[in-house]
Length: 197
Ligand SMILES: [Zn+2]
Image 1 (cartoon, helix red, strand yellow):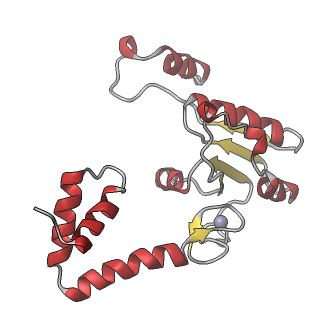
Image 2 (cartoon, protein in one colour):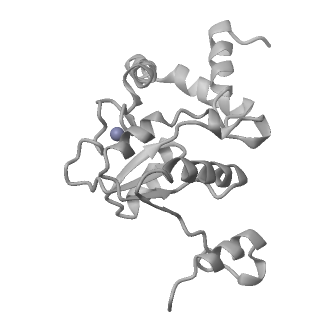
């Protein structure tokens, strides 16, 4: 049986979303079809709105609908500490820790496998913040992957010309984990990041 064209189009679009397979796409499309008209229109509208109204903050790169973003324009946040993350979504878990400094979002996937060179990255916005002279510590909070490691080293070199302390997250053993089953890299980094008891 051939589905009506508009329904097929919707299924095709939904299937392009991450973690959505053909069956889920079909189920979602049929669900949307049965929605009250006003709700379906609202859904279409918010999809357009998110594209039109959300953009990277001109200072830190965080996603925002007003420029500068709510973090950059918050006077109670410390300007002395700058946490560098790969994606704006990385800010959410760090915010939950109670961190009260500023951020800088790279917004750029870097992958060694793609032959990309970290030196091609536009570091001007970062240098602009550092040139202000208010930042005392830069925290590199990049993903604990080979790519994150290469990026961290590159950024540390970029920052080294400025009079700031560069630190990075200590990667340790998961709580409730077992040392016997920890991989070598995790264990080495946990050992490097050890603290006085
Ligand atoms: Zn911002």
